[in-house]
Length: 238
Image (cartoon, rainbow, N blue to C red; front, side, top):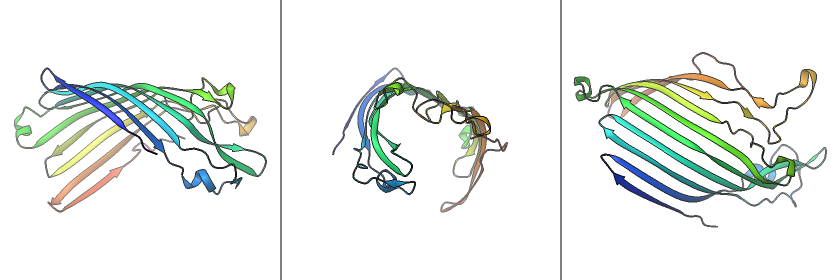
């Protein structure tokens, strides 16, 4: 099995470039797809084909001035032969190719060094503001379960946003504070809740935002110390 890719780029203006690429990929079968520990698997039927993908992307990025970078692109990825578990009865589970999904959206990122044109910048110091945004529209385009066509795949949030600030000095130290916000998302492909009463589970995982702090100090050219705290506010999410 082989897959390929092709891309084109075009420089224009001052420090700008447009780009287009098409690529293919696949996810090989994992051990859990063949003989996982979560059920008595029917080996004769537990031989799904690898999931395949075709991705298209077009965008523009550039460095229009010192210390400033941006990248904006549109994308679409088509997945074929998604591998999912199917419960045959109380004890037997098989993994099968259940259908195809389409994922499309926008990705954007930018970074700006506030000290790029200052004396501090000349001295190797940087104060960077950065932000990233991914917007996603995903749905089933084919499924063994016809009622599932048009549903959102599980764990496909409509947006993920990240922003923060980094203070660093070349070959010396770095401190970065960032926040990540993730939209609500379905946890199963049926897009339905589960259970009743005290066992009721909502259809969606709620949205959440967390903040992270990380740092680095270089002792010498061969040694450096790294440290960080994830989820500074001890946010409870699931």
